[in-house]
Image 1 (cartoon, rainbow, N blue to C red):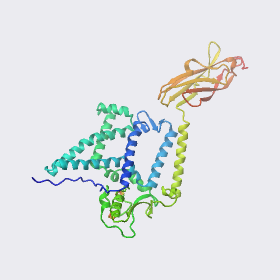
Image 2 (image 1 turned 90 degrees about the vertical axis):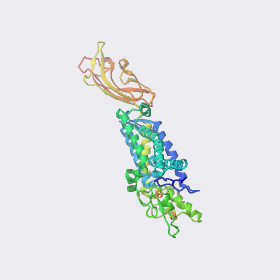
Image 3 (image 1 turned 90 degrees about the horizontal axis):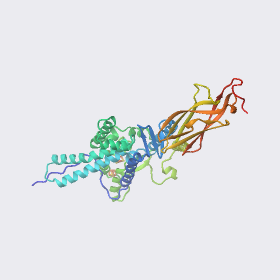
Image 4 (image 1 turned 45 degrees about the vertical axis):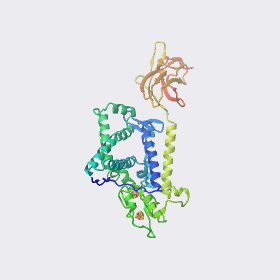
Length: 445
Ligand code: SF4
Ligand code: SF4
């Protein structure tokens, strides 16, 4: 009986080299990033809720209508992304990006399946084994794609709603069709594209190349004394299939540092150091200990310091905006369809409108009162309002005052609003109209 040749994955694989460092660091960082990716939307830490028009940002539930906070948040995130690309180059791609994490996981899973199939089916032909490996891979990839899609879509839709749709296998409503389509795209992405997505489709890769300059962190081949033994291990280790010796600026390079590990592994055995390293720009300034700590973490010119200052300004503005934010948005405005009315008991009425939105997560109670006008009161139950989380109400109420307290014409008043639970009460300066005709009301004492 003849044993058939083993099938191989067509994907570039990493050569495992004992003692390598960056691979281990990268895998640890990626594991942490995976947990963060899953946790952020599921616990409302950071996500945009499109149906409810809410923006969750580290404990604050912001309404999309809160323009200033949403603007500050988006500006802060945008500057953070741009600063990351300018200072640390494609660090995001190599270490933090979910697309890269899942692509590498898919590569590893596929290789493991191929190994098992080769072992369990030694007498089957290569085509049959390839088919078996592809089927097993597809069966495992499907639930993984559903999970990744679930987490991804949770950034935009409440996870509980999504879970209920998933349980009912909803593919009839618009939401269900979108979910099913994203699952299909995810499946095809990790079945067929994986890292090709980074070079062919991802706009962030292009953006990073536009933002980098002579001090940006990159993976650099530097061999002034000709120590390269041309073993090509760096090329074979590269998941993107490129040769770092040709240039540090190849669009495909994600700065994953697998080539550094490969080179340090092989040259380490010969008693020399790697000739591929992380460096701050082409000049070859090595990322090792040199200069003060500020330079060592990448702040190597005024431009970077300016970006850091800008980032701090936005972070401070955002913190202040969130800390002074009132969970209950309250507007009070006079209803001037009639300036005033006088009731049978001789009291003067002015009508106002209240618009209240509870942007908090707990029930809120609003109680209104009047100041600066003797014996004035809010009529009826208008002075007390209970608002459920997320509820918006608009209602009218009358401020009523005895004629004896009023000056003819305009009276300045304040309407006070106590909101519980809440921060300091709110107050609104308003005008109260009284009849002007002589003898209509007695003069105020
Ligand atoms: S050249 Fe090196 S750093 Fe760039 S993608 Fe390939 S292995 Fe990663
Ligand atoms: S791994 Fe190092 S020594 Fe080998 S070819 Fe690449 S750069 Fe040269």
